[in-house]
Amino acid sequence: MDSSAIDIFNILIIAFGAYIIYAAIILKKDGKISKSLMLSPGANDSTIKNKDGFIKFMFPRTVILGIVVTLSGCWDIVFPQLAGNGWIELTIILVFMLILVLYIRDIKKAGKVFGEQK
Image 1 (spheres, rainbow, N blue to C red):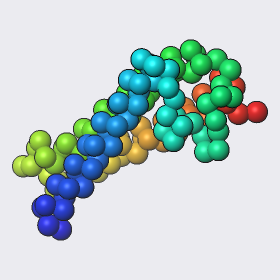
Image 2: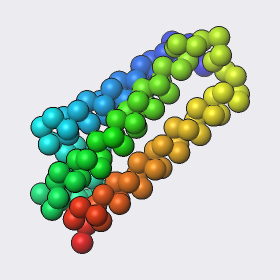
Image 3: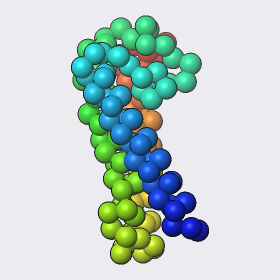
């Protein structure tokens, strides 16, 4: 694969990570919930009964997800000499996937605990 394609892909991942962090900050600062990022499909933020509890629960998790996504995108750019090392790349992918799965689990948990789902 062309290195410019890898750089573009990494930049997109970094941008998505930055968006996730931005959404977490807006959640904490303004109480605005990113429906596509923090709620189960088909859910609506108006059905959350305990918004303050939801914000306290989801804010740190969303920040961690954003940091992990951003660092995943930065890896090949910051450490080009290590790019392509199979074990390191596999570890990064596994950590990324683990954090993503835990985040999805926490979205469902937040929905049950804070009244999003019936």
